Length: 452
Image (spheres, one colour):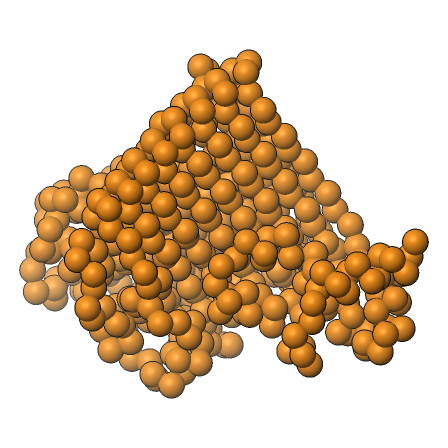
């Protein structure tokens, strides 16, 4: 029996009881999609290194794992407060994929904003959800989106009405517990931003230190004309967790989408980002940072489709890899035929903190129009030892000096982060607890001047 079929048998057996005990039966369209997802996942199977898109990433940690399903959302509020983001925010919380009303805060939502768990949305407004869910991320995209389609029971649905400006950030908080047996979850996130709306949404994945779970999340974002959305993914899973994520964006005329994809944890991490700029004036900015050490493996695949003229995209991903960590970046920009007067820029820069760390990077452009402005590039290097020495001559110990210069390398991305809470998480992961707030720009200028 194949690993794929074995995995499916276990999952189907464990999820059957949960669905039989549900208070209300699932809508027929949900059952049909689950069947399609299951069939497609079994047909595709788990990806192997023979698959071009996965040739650097070994998923046996997942395919050979024996994962249970979480039965409850019991979690200490004190632990949740320690791990979660300390923000004044609208908050939906999930524990191993199970919704926790106790850890959520959805009081006093502004008029025109809907925020609810996926399970609730499917029961109360299932026709509207069914019309959007799976529109961007179908079962054909990858084995993991097919798996998610087959077994997603929970997640979030966010609807922002036309002209609505949401002042507070909306946080989707996903906690991973240290369970006796590892568990899996397949969250599904649907975000619909109406015309001229504005909001900030954060997907935060964080776990207890001994958690060894598998999260397979699919997020779909639809932006109507003139919508402005800032979207953060902050992934801080334990060093035993496996995390697979797929983010799909559909942009309308004059919309603006800004993505911050920050990966600080996880043993095995795969991120897919697919953006479609479908109308004139659409603008997309993608900022990514992945920091890995030990034997962590972080794989980022991005695809930006310029499907209309007069569209703009800018992508800047930074990788920082230490010890025996491995990073992968594959970024592709496709300019479709007749998509004239577009502008697209892509950059991937990587910093190796160890001789044993590895990075595989491949920026790509496919251009089928002739009046465009495009650029792409990739670099890989190590810390400048002379700069380290220059900082040490100013009384900064070596560990702090290296941490500061590493943080400065990430600065081009972090300068764009508007949330101090997120920036502080990155600072602590990359540079440790600093003795005081340093002016990184001044320090780097000093170190550079000393080398002149």
